[in-house]
Length: 488
Image 1: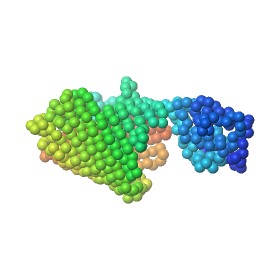
Image 2: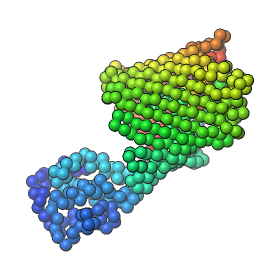
Image 3: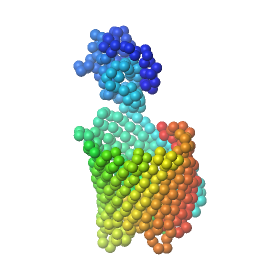
Image 4: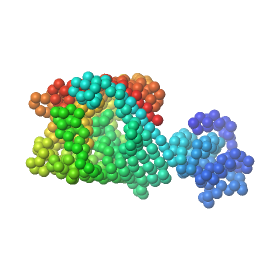
């Protein structure tokens, strides 16, 4: 690291006069000249380095500081980055005099090294061994009681085209098919646009859920996502379109006879989203969010009589201390269905269901031995998770997305204990109170332990048990999962 090199080398040049000329035979001339010749950095305002006259140490440091700010990484090599590191060490005092902090230079050079040639390559590998009872197929073990599964295999490619345009693509699965691919574009007035196949998740930005428990966002879409920050917050606009017939599942695809919309796909239609978030201070923020999805032929939802589905929600947060916060969100949903249609019957005539979520989030710094997430939710009949995912389907089928038709309310506890840099344990408990007579409350609890073998590789062992999935009496199952995960 540059910081360590500077600390070691500091005595050698601590008393050098910054306005003294750099000797004409000094190695720094060749280094700066080579970087300039390859277009990695720029020189004086006229584009030269005044090779016929000596420059002061202060001028050399100024050139290095400018280089670090505007260096062209599409032209830089690993050798160039090493050369810049040597220059930083040599002219440390002069850079300090210019107000350039060495620790920030170190992080900047790390980013430069990471983006050599304008490309960045990242990846994830996740392999699961799963052993279950197979009693009701709630964990989708493909008809067996045990299964080895490549649950995630991703290659992330990023190309830094220039200072305004970045390309991202993600290969998914063993077949190496692109799932996400987009451009990030910077416009004037701090407006940014993400265009292409992408995931958006406003609920995650507001910390309205843990694990994969989103109600509305965390969706993959094809379209445009604009953002515009302002002094106290941000505006966002989403315009997306989906094609095809999609799928309307009124029973669970993996568990025939059990009611669920899980696995449904809206099909043809537009998705419009609007968002505004205001940070009043470091303790309090509020957001207002709106999504509207329409359904057009040949969508299976349109064929069933759905015209549109919209959701308006507001969220607020208060940080009582850096480690203790509370959040509240209120959701207002609106169905537009054809009278007498299958869609109207499916939602039970509840065309405007609402929902409430209250969260207490306590970090381990406050309780010392554990973190604690407490989440209470209440639903009107007919309320549906707009992303068609089961919000609490953590490891298997627990609730499905049609939560308002099955449950009056729910309660979730999540706790993590970080014991050392390598060892962590966690627990999760969910209970959903059944809405309908003759059905039972759903419960799901999880216990797990994680061991970080290296900073990028961990092993995780979990036990998960589901009782009365989708409020169906005796719809029970359990699973042991051993996970190997590495990021690179």
